[in-house]
Length: 316
Image 1 (cartoon, rainbow, N blue to C red):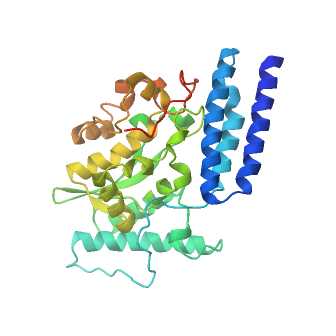
Image 2: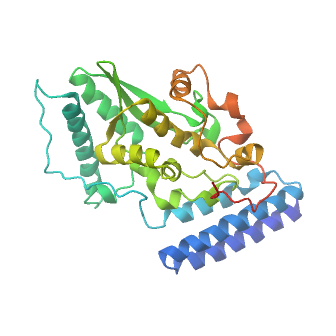
Image 3: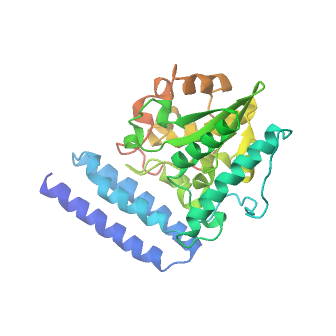
């Protein structure tokens, strides 16, 4: 690394530190105003670094700092789901419907999550951030489903729908259950709420090098149909997957995987993925993937500076 690039990095870090001080002592709404300034400044700084000949990987310590800074924002949710009542126990018997059985599976898993949360002083499920809980949660649900004779399969949703996806440096995966019953498909996702925190859903993040793109919740809020799908899953923990709901659910992840280069390349700000129910079935089956259609450079982390760092992403 040249002395010039090192000096630029020190200057960028100093400015981010200054923004962080402002954020700490600001109201919540003001925090987000400052955060928008952070992303704008950072995207412009990336342009200058790239012009100076830097590989933008040198920004990863700063990008991590910005990302972690936002994680200390309040846990405001884009959708307030109905509170979980531990006393509303779900009991099933041999005559129970599939819907009643699914409610019981979700209840038992939410009780497990709540009991673990209580050990660290969190006393309601609504106060719990379920980031990184999806794997253990899906495995627990899968085990219970099989014990009652249901055909449940673990499904790992990988960035770009690639097996062992390298996008997001191996992160960004989500684990759920697909349950097949009498010709119907049900999705069980008890940790979906992690994607609906305001702090993770700002569109200004798009195009910021080595910072995760806005979470699926940002995109699920954009249409009444997608929002209804999200509300059903957040409230009940499961949904019967009609073709519309199937597309809605995976559309959220598809857009989560897209970075700023996608929008530069396509100039498509509709936030309406062209993929159908059948396309997503092929993606999940491993016979096709998003990368083949959109390219590596358009997915996962932004690895180069935007040509126009002032690009606006909230236009539709």
